[in-house]
Amino acid sequence: MKRKNVIIIGAAGRDFHNFNTYYRNDANYNVVAFTAAQIPDIDGREYPKELAGDLYPEGIPIFAQGQLPDLIKKFKVDECVFSFSDISYQDVMGIGAIVNSAGADFKLLGPNQTMLKSNKPVISVTAVRTGTGKSQTSRKIIETLMAQGLKVVAIRHPMPYGDLAAQRVQRFATIEDLKKHHCTIEEMEEYEPHVSRGNIVYAGVDYEAILTAAENDPDGCDVIVWDGGNNDFSFYKPDLAITVLDPHRPGHELQYYPGEVCLRTTDVAIINKVDSATAEAIKIVENNIKTANPSSLIVKAESTITVDQPELIKGKRVLIVEDGPTLTHGEMKIGAGTVAAQRLGAAEIVDPSPYLVGSLKETFAKYPHIENLVPAMGYGEKQLKDLEATINNTDCDAVIIGTPIDLSRVIKINKPTARIHYDLNEVDGPSLDNILTNFLNKQQAELV
Figure (cartoon, rainbow, N blue to C red):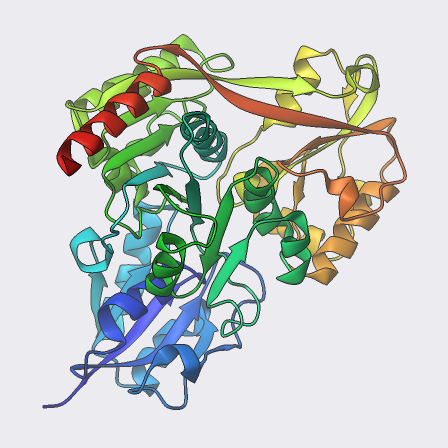
């Protein structure tokens, strides 16, 4: 029987997982290419033969998504599978129209085809958009579980932007492991808060192999927390699903893929940032939760912000550096650094546009809504140097670091820096402590 020729449309994450779980060992399909978007410089590589399996002895090439129509014709493609996240329905179907107009079928794979089952209890933490506060929610959950004496292993949504074969299974237990695995700023922002609190983090490319390693971690594993990213749904079947929503972007929970999937399948919906959003926006989000998933528990939470050196902000001209993906494809116009500057009375938020260097000029051209903030872009050495030069060129009194890691540890900043820390604090609805206690009691009862 003729094999179906397939292109997987992705961004170095869900695309590889969909291949591994659905296509890799199925002789009915022939995956001729991946395409890459969202993340800079991830095309021009190949999915290596070591990961691709026996059906793909030469590996699989990765092309830029802009080449999609030509690739469909060149490889006589039968179907294209959309496999990345945090994208509006209009844009998803725009890609679908490109695929259909080139003659191929357009396909989405769902949880039943791609979720793996663990032999450990799994708590998934997902979000409806990038930058909702999912990471601080994961941290709060893990701290609560560890306080009960449980060994928690976090498995992070993939960010494999380097040597894919070398990144098949990655284990992070110390800050030194971040250097060992040549982590980007985006990776450090997600892994460092975990390892600094004493729990193990796994990530990589092959999430079946990662799951096996996590379940058998040498330090022990009682519970797995899926620390999702980029509003994707979990790679593992959750026993408790938690989804975070953002009232700074009301309505997006029903407008972006696959964020709405996360909302409709969650057990607990957390409306974060209620301390900095309007009552009207919070109500819109709450009503959308009740419409889409009326059986879910609703928790309202503050994103509590603390500043290590507030005197560097009050009355000063400040440059604000925020989390990169939150500002770029997350489309946010503010972050924790901005909230801190407003609350502490900064004299001016300095516009960085006259001082932009290299790749940051391209980022601002692509995402003009960023305006007077600097996204912490650090996917490679060049972007790190451009970020460092832009910050150091800017005429300001101090730099507010609104990213989850201390940027001054990875780049040299020639100005005083004030670092922002943010944590989840539930203010209405059931507490996470009670939710997790009830979950653990149920798990224990099922074992008996």
